[in-house]
Length: 407
Image (cartoon, rainbow, N blue to C red; front, top):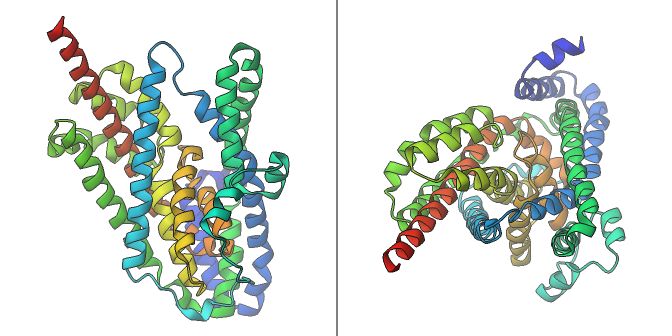
């Protein structure tokens, strides 16, 4: 029984649960609304993941920076470019999500017991990023404080060196354990989607699903804009034709699009940029795995930004300017801790929704089409990894030629 269940592709299981939930809500609404606890369990499991996953993943990412001779400088440049493109990605996501009409039916405004809260000012937001008690921040799930503390721990372990190596290894192992637990929890997605969608449709009707097409279109549009405008401009400034770049990496983009795995696309991406674009293997071997871990412009930048706007509109919750700043900052920082495997973008969306106080129940509306969205998100992420590799590789080559000409 279990073997047959897991033999079905994950996205088919989720989509099937989505359809069953909708059908149940339409045909037997009285029974369907009783399935909501399945969705509640799924949401609680996602909340359980957030704090330890973010802490371990960010420490793990920082500990990977600059290991070995000469990689410190490369790591700093790489991370700087990744963060730069992540900011642009979140801004593009906010712009597309705000300009396009992805408004959901207002009949769902009571779908979550959302209590409007006072939005803190910029000074209060900044102060709230510093944890007074980091253990309390972990226990209470204060995401921005966890991010700050994790970054400090990672930097301190690197500075202490050998005496802290054991702690670093423990936290690296902790990250791997959390990735595995995340994979386990995401197996609950079909059941969570079934419970929440059965309840929503049974209580509010099928019209609540109408905005999904516009939402998917907004994600794809934002990703394409980011790929061609941001990455295309980067490689052009590095002295390469964007057309030649995209033509050379198309096969790797296709692998990313079909597998939805940044890690799984590393071999194809490595071959594309080393054999066709002339990037040194040492650069490709460092930048691509690092990018697969922390460069998540699609998953951690564009997707949370548009999804937050979508869910806010879905429940009729107005977003203030401070909320947009928080979305940008959180989406950028969340991209550091996103694992390059299918499905974890839902966890990163949970982070963003927690920070700005939006109802997590809105995840049910987009979880069923997550595979379709994840295809474009992953292609965006991998394209960014390859673009940064090209920029750094050509910059290093120019520096080498300049040194040779002056010697």
